[in-house]
Figure 1 (cartoon, rainbow, N blue to C red):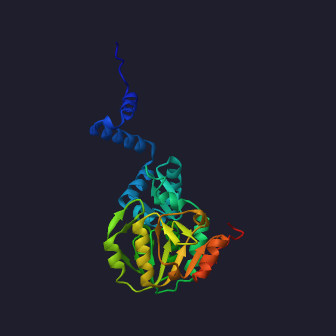
Figure 2 (figure 1 turned 135 degrees about the horizontal axis):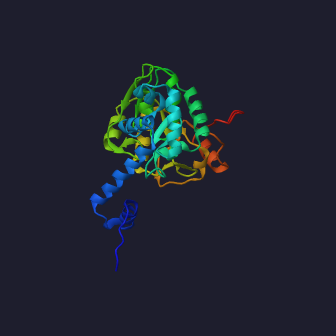
Figure 3 (figure 1 turned 180 degrees about the horizontal axis):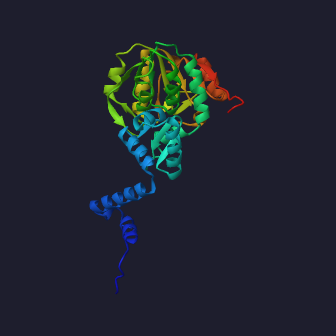
Length: 298
């Protein structure tokens, strides 16, 4: 049998085909070559922006990137647009996230969905927030839009477990921001667990701004994550008002973990009316339904 010499690309393909049996050093070689090929295809400015995103934990607002790179926000937006087209980052409302293998299930994917609807919901919630209020914001993607709208407010006391909300509101307009400790869940861009819950219990909040994965006419709001459900329950206990932000596709979803007791929720902010069963249940629980309807410009 004659063995034919293999080129570098063929070697790389063969290593990939071998799957789990490939030695660690070979996987590292493939990764290094992938990063090298990526860098060769990007401009110097694009590489600078990708590097800045990595240093900022994988996500950042356009204004933050502009300041870090000492360029205009318009330059950052153009660079993000090019990187998004190249697949190196994912462009989202007000900033960008590094693209990665978990993008199908990540916060980056969620925040890129239903952006117009989330922006309308966020604007409605922001109308109910006064300067100087004490707030809790969770890791929800709709809550991230709320955080962006709250940049118009001043003197807020913000308690959050969300890196995105913290980036939006820290050191801005006299806000005081308290970031909860606990276990980092990178896929949710936030912290959870016993430490986060205990720290949250020390605050007296005017309003908790929460999101959820689903809503049931029997159990109320539901979550895929037990840790997220528990932290939402703690936040509801600490707040005088609870604003639940939810886009309409979640009305047809389900999840295994129950969130705050439904009667603790002050209002559900959404973009469409829920179905009859859910609407009737919310009304029976005393939850106001606030619909942020689309305008002519949407």
